[in-house]
Length: 197
Image (cartoon, rainbow, N blue to C red; front, side):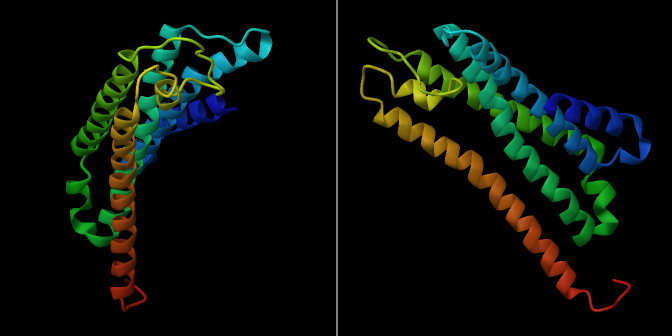
């Protein structure tokens, strides 16, 4: 259902010229991200449902961590970029076409992909270099970097703290942008005194 719903969103927003606006551009990217995220986690879950052994190789787990981490954090940045469009449309309607120009939208999308894939590779590499011995059983439905780091045979408090700080930054900046956007919209609406406005 997720794949069908997102595929329909991709198809409709691509075919309908009226939907070639910044907000639908970012919705298109979010639908694509959702397809990526779903296809990197769900197949392994479906395989595990069908077989008795619920194992994944270490390399397979690391690949899944790297691939799954990127779309999730990219989604946060794309949601923040999406929040900018209505803010610009309400607060600066005359400059909207200039500020949310397609080149700028593409740049925002590219920056979000690049920064999050870099973050994903860095965090996954932190887990790869750690030594493991003994039981490497994870009570989780998919591979997650923090869960794997906790299985290491060395002290990982510093690594976990660094990753926690990175996750907070990844979440805090987009949330601040989204909240600021909504506050600006609310202030612009309150300042409108006429019915036409």
